[in-house]
Length: 431
Image 1 (tube, helix red, strand yellow):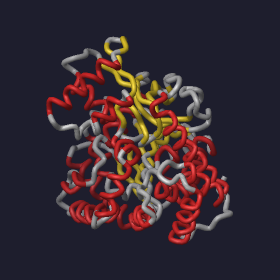
Image 2 (cartoon, rainbow, N blue to C red):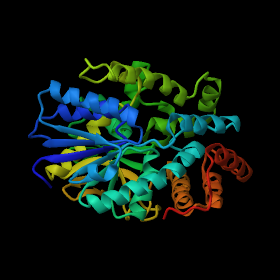
Image 3 (tube, rainbow, N blue to C red):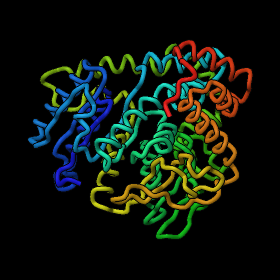
Image 4 (cartoon, one colour):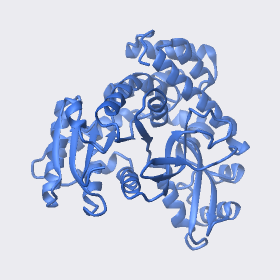
């Protein structure tokens, strides 16, 4: 690895890019010796705005970080140590279809799971395989830090079908870990938490204090805090936590365990999330284009993604400084979690050093939510296979297995309508 690091951002026209630049600048050169950032996007207009803002942010901090940008990926990959991927094939218009069409069938429309997540994966996997193969050819030692959704499915596809070194990142579980540690700090010293599951289907299932297991005590204490505060928003449903003896990520609470309530709220909302983000991003880009702005646009606070840059740079530091740090990410299972295929992606705590992440052993998934995780994992792996082989039948099978659908006729209808809406051409292999 070079003395000064080069980071390539693919999908740099994203509204999240200022978070990444700000995160870089929050570290000293000793902590994070980044000397160059290359920025790529297929949308030249969005890229120009974000590249110019990045240049102003770097200049305002007096940092010697070279910013380069362009529409040709290969030159920007040369010499890269890390490649951050955050692409959105089809843009927010495609996301709107992923969200709105399932709702007509009384199915939750969401971009990372279910029918919406599947069609986002189907159009994104070919693009990500192409990017990964270029990274493998031009910067074979680089780590790909993937934020492209659905992150777990994308990471599994790239890991299984290329030789690129990809790590699936998400700020969801790490943000929960920090919050829970803060809530429990007075009760337990040297607290650590461990997760099992998939991206956006994770459960914090184990706590240790000074190396001793304190899971039951920690969960009971969290429930006491929730009762005393009268506000369980930060935890989700306390009754559910008491029932399954684990703390699920918000997506699990909303989309699986309170499905009917969430579906009703989505159906009654005048806008889908995609439509809301379109409005927010218009404001972000208007602010970002201001030639006097040299910081994150204030409108970015409305976009979400809390902890997005924090987890990115924790991984960079863990790898660069060979820390052996315990961090959560998506990797191939390789025996860490019982009952999940070895070549399937899982989101678990890994030990991260110069070689990248290695999953810590989990063992069996607790019975309370084992079936849910295995059903969604089946959907994810079938979705990867459907995308790589161009097979419509596997897409139908994937949705038939998914808990949000679970009906063959409904799966057929959803695949037909979403295929037509996105002009999917089945039969084309990208393997």
